[in-house]
Length: 212
Image 1: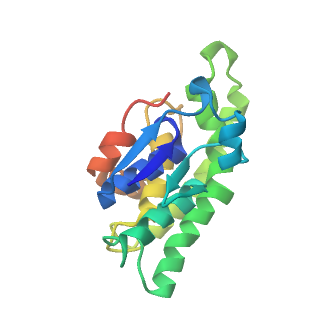
Image 2: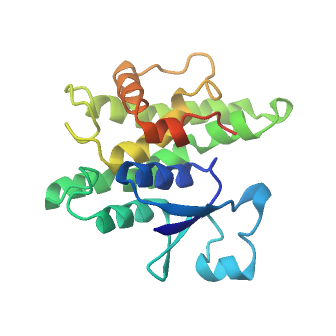
């Protein structure tokens, strides 16, 4: 059991919710962030000095950063965490690299696409930012397209891992109808992977709902 602080429409909270469902780990949750407030209170900042989400409370301790939260849940589950987090050193490192890449490369490239098309009123949208984000994101999704081009069903081979969770949440923000603009690259191999992971109950529950 753990307690999750964060709103469900956050990409980073979605990762943790999806991971917990894959592992069948029970939790409680409190809405935090944006319209729900809380993140700027002294009590919350004492737990998470960044004032961001998610934050989890478990085993009498506090942890923040979504990818670290997923790793923690996998480690608590033990073994290879139902295949989500391989135990072999190189296999695990290959999964970890995608989590790092999502934060360092994919997120900055894609941020303006989501924020402008989903959270900015149409009359206020800077479409130059949108098109720049499409170009920058396409460079990233080309890397994924190439990674999957050998016929593997998942990002790191035959098994579904937290790399698929991490990247799948952001694929929702590329393939979703809420963000599509004319002439966006299609990436058919990546789309097939996205459709495949999109059938998983955790995706359906937490990632598939309308973006807002």
